[in-house]
Length: 189
Image (cartoon, rainbow, N blue to C red; front, side):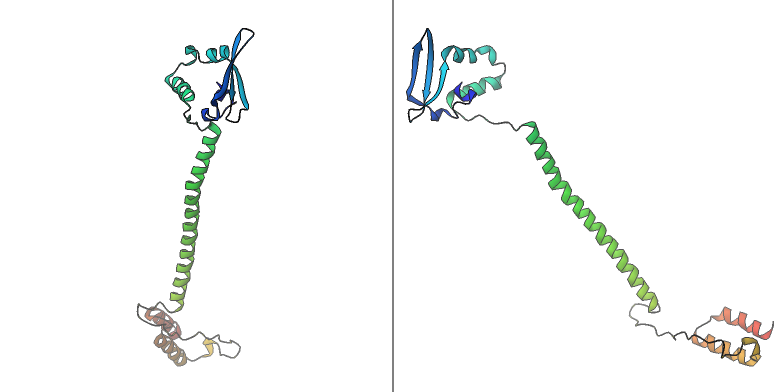
């Protein structure tokens, strides 16, 4: 009873030799004292007997708890609902939050891969789309022609236009189909 009411933490705190029963005014009281002879609690036997009435122990758990109190054993403490909720939240945070971080990290790495691959493809195209093992294909750089100094194509003779078309075909600036189309145009066909 003293433990239930919070007067005593454990039975080992109570000295049986120094505790005593007192009979006053038709009631019997039990005075619990510690080992230093300090009074810990004053309990009325009527309250004690009433508090341990068999009707109060409805379940086996209640009976086991009452027995453990009487024997001085430690009683298991149940985690309250708020603590359970906090622990569940922390557990989910610990296991879910790192998962989300890993997912975000993987997304960033995937985006970086896509950017790097796009840059590599652009570099490959700029190198002339070489086959594996080939170096950079040397392309003849395009030269900007200032039209004010050149003579218009119409002013060139047919022979000069055909020579220019042959030169363009040899350098790879035009393919066979384009060559034939431009040749027919130069010949007026």
